[in-house]
Structures are given as structure tokens and as C-alpha cells.
Length: 266
Image (cartoon, rainbow, N blue to C red; front, side, top):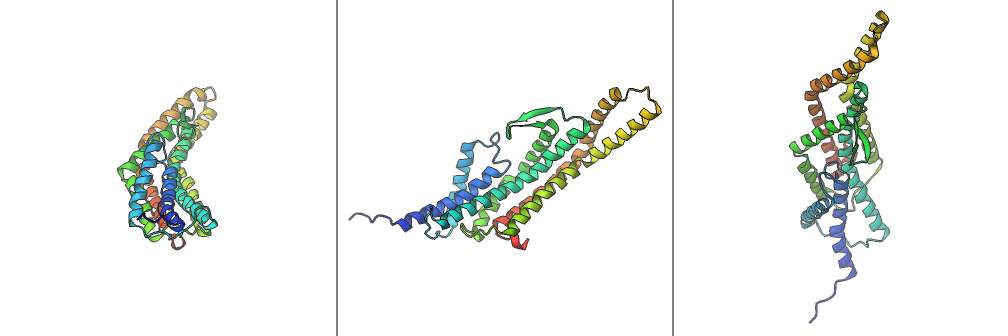
């Protein structure tokens, strides 16, 4: 006797059980700074990692209710899972942006802004100082097992916030916008020592030019500013990594709040 063909409801249930978690996980990996970097993780590896994590998640989830993928409910679920995954990865991207913007401020202040190169990740010119800070942040992220924390957060999120139950309300957008504002605050704190020191040096050169007009300030000031910039970077580097660690910890906490649906209570 031939086996009965699966019904439409059963097929859509199977698709939903695997597809909705894959959308959230894939979007998070695509938007996160380390997993989404093509130089670090190739596209095939990202796809394979997303499929592997999805298989682990699906094995512990309750069967999803039958939902036609092209219905309004299915499209709404697709949009909510996509936005939630992108937001979780975007949080880490903003955390790494503090290093990038802070490095740009340091480079422009110390006269190292001309030392640019084409960043293959975003296709734009980036100061070498900014790239150096980003590399240090990436190494610190891996040393803290941040890649494992990200995977753990997104997997645990399915236990309390199954697919289709994400509520992206105004509080969600407010928390995301506030976190973006903290990116600029963190970047300013990173660049503040260099900006303050170079400002004092420029004031000193201004006083010298008034006291001795025959002194060529431009021939002396530029190399002095660059040398001071290198010295300031060397002296402030030990404080850079602990500050970025605190930013990462806060990003992980907010990611967990998003994944568990606790944004309204955060």
C-alpha cells in the first residue's frame, strides 16, 4: 500500500520549522562584523554555519504552526525574523564602529589622516589608524569568545521567542537608536586623549609663533604633531582595549534582550 502524500499543511509546517529560524540566524550572521566580513569568513562558510546552527535549533523547537509562506502572516513573520536578526548583528557592527570612528578622529587630529587605504570590506578609504584599532578589536572579540557568545545568544533566543512571536514595537527602535548614539560617545572617548594633547601642542606652537615670528612653525609643527600622535597612541593603547571590552559586554547584553524579547523591560 502506497504511503499517503503529505498535505499542504504538513509541507508548510516543515518549511516554517526550518525556514523561519534560518532567516533570523542568517540575517544575524550577515550583519555581524566578524561573521559578515568576507575576508574572515567566506560566503560558503557563512551559509554552512547558518544551516548548521539552524539544524541544532530546529531539533529543540516545538513544531511550528502551519503557515503559508506567501500569505500576509507568512510575510509578516519573514519581515519580523529578518529585522530581528539584522538588528542583533547591527548592534555588534555599531560596537566595532566606535573603534573605526575613534581611529578616524585620532588620525585627523594627529596629522595621520593622509595615510589611507581602500578597505575591502566596505570599499571606502579608511585611515590606517582606524584599521589598526579595528584589527585589535577583532582579536579581542575572538579572545573573549565573542563569536561563541553571539551563537549562544541567538540559539537561546528561540527558547523564549520562537519564530513568529517577535514584536518589533517602538521600544525596540528606541533602544536601537540609543545604542547608535553611544557609538559616537565611545568614539569620542577613544579619541579624546589625542585631541586634548594635540590641542595643547597647537596652543604652544601658537604662543611660540607670536614670541618668535621668524620661527618656521610649519616645518617644526607637522613632524612634532605626528611624533606626539604616535606617542599618544602608544600610551593610550592599554586603556583602549578595556574600554572596548565594556562596549562589547553592553552589546552582548542588549543582543540578549532583543533575542529574548525583553526590550520593553530593559
